[in-house]
Image (cartoon, rainbow, N blue to C red; front, side):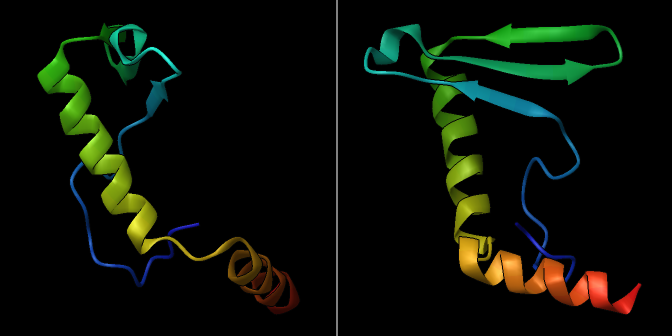
Length: 77
C-alpha cells in the first residue's frame, strides 16, 4: 500500500497491469485509457513500466505495516 504521504511517482493515477513470467519476451503491460485497454510489449516500454512499478514498490508500506495502517483508518471511521 502506498499512502497519500508518499511522494509522487511517475505513473501515479494510471491503471496498469504488468503480466510477466519466466519468459520475459512474453511479458505484456496493459494500460487502461479512455479509448480502451492498450497492450504494450516493446522491450523499452516494458523496462519503463518495470521501473515505475519498482519505484512504487520502494514507496509502499510492508504488508504488516499496511495492515496496521488500514486498521487505524477503520478505527477512525
